[in-house]
Image 1 (cartoon, rainbow, N blue to C red):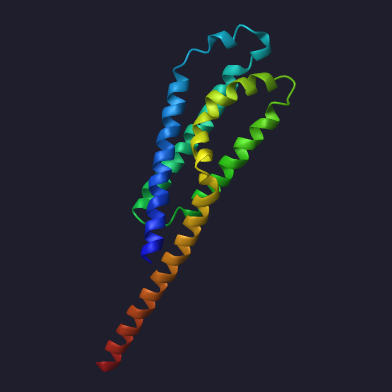
Image 2: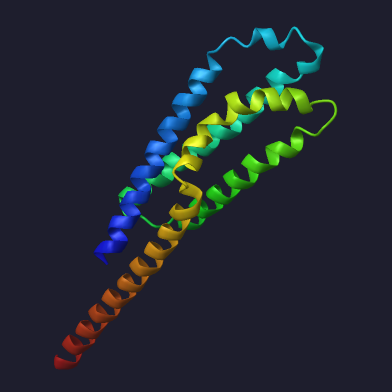
Length: 165
């Protein structure tokens, strides 16, 4: 049981750090001057792509932060949400490449990709999407089975006490 607690807290702390690094990256990107991209007609959709992708990333960081805090407190109610969030981030990250192939907006999306989505790179560097969901799911199973065992033992003690009376 202690291992499950440690893993859950470790994923929580890592989630908070990844969210913080992502916020930092995106906030610095949002305050950078990209006006040179608006001069070329080929990059006419740079700002809509940049702000859309930045918004998606920031929403993911907020969700990651919330999950991290919950996991540190050993609250397992957001485990499925967390796994879904990580799956969404991976699909989102790789689907951006397909947008590069779009004739009208492709070059603008490609230009905005690094500056808008770079905060997610921290998660990729430590392979967070590979190990974090597995640890959380394993810990969730262990914590639930422990809670069920404790609940059964309490019920047995209560039944024994009632029979003695």
